[in-house]
Each structure stands twice: as structure tokens, then as C-alpha cells.
Length: 79
Image (cartoon, rainbow, N blue to C red):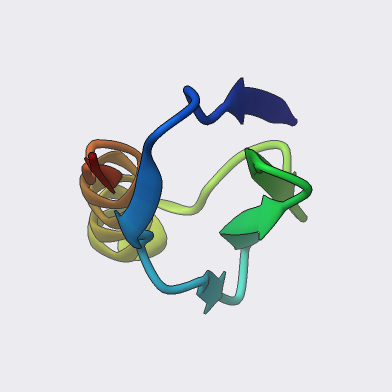
């Protein structure tokens, strides 16, 4: 997890909604929380198979794209 302390005089205007993805071979969940003047980001990744079958590869790549998109989202603070 990562913690970001909100500077004095700022408020959180936007935090991304939690993400929960479950597939046959993998799982990922992540969330941003506001707690005690801090933004806390937590995530978890599970891969159920060491080798992803070729026929599951397109879903696996889509899964990773969703993770990249989510972790690239912005947090918006307002003064």
C-alpha cells in the first residue's frame, strides 16, 4: 500500500472508484481511501496459474491493460 498525506488547505475532490477484476487465471483488486487526512492506495494481484494457456492470453493482456489504466488514474485535490 501507498500513503499520501494531503497538504494543509487542500481537500480531495476526486478519488477513483475501487476496481475488482476476476478471471479464470488471475485476480486484481485495488482501491483509494481517504482516512485521517491521508489517501491510502492498496492493491492485490493473484495469478492462479504459473503458465497462462495461449487461448487465455488475449484476456490476460486485457486484464493487464485494465490494471495499467486504473493505476494511471489521477487523484484530484482542491485548494
